[in-house]
Length: 396
Picture 1 (cartoon, rainbow, N blue to C red):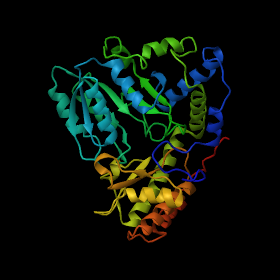
Picture 2: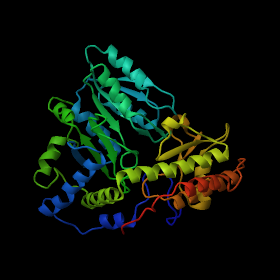
Picture 3: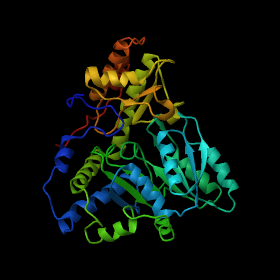
Picture 4: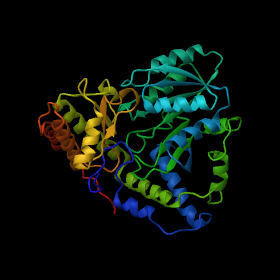
């Protein structure tokens, strides 16, 4: 693997030099007003990126998985029922976590490649007259399959029958890269991490709690210590954590939020859409298909590309790493060996993306697939040339 090449995995993503420098800082007293000058602006920046006016933002030294656990353990009790669809590896893992915590999970099995079945959610919620379901889980962007789901439709399903269940959304590979509207969509807990759209290393679980979710914490009885939001909130009041925080990463997060907000969220989303469309143009030119089953569910942060029947897609990933020093993502779970993934999120430009498309072409040609060199690159070039945008700038 070459450190001079950008990575094309769907996280961790490429780190702008300015953010790397922001994380590389001297030791400070993490129980001082100086730390508060890092912590509180970072929380406010995250709140803006979530498009929320009122969310309580908590930042734990963890990853997105820790964010899932924060959502569950602070709001639910053993034996509570939750509703979830399994349509990829990460929704599967969140369901597994629920089971390990003694929750009763109503699972809607969904094809890997489809979005969340809001219509099925609606029927189940309508039949739940006693409101036994306490939370609905929704993966906004399923990283394993390159599928985005309509969170507004899930909220509509809840509201249509007046169901009081909380709405928990995994936005790990969407928030800060794709449009996310916490308040408008009625999201009660939003979960993300530092290593994708925020363009940092892994190490921070970032969660936003609505007022309804905060109210639920008062009666929730699942065991929690490290991820207790009340302990964290008390710490924030005195510019501190209940334990030692990742100060450098928090400083990086503060700078990341500034960078994203300076670019403008709508510009960030447009940039991701445009780059993704170039990748999708390349896939069509190769004569291949995405795992995502329709344009309405295409992800703007990762494309899972199906290879011909009988071909092990993982070979593309291993060949790219060994021969060209470039990282792509392997298929996971049910689509392992059937897809390879091109991550196109975070600190990425059209020109960087073209290098990834070219590398994928070389790998497929090397491995005997019927791919014409230059076909995908040319298709992406045609799209990018016709869809101009101000070049991304690193504030380094």
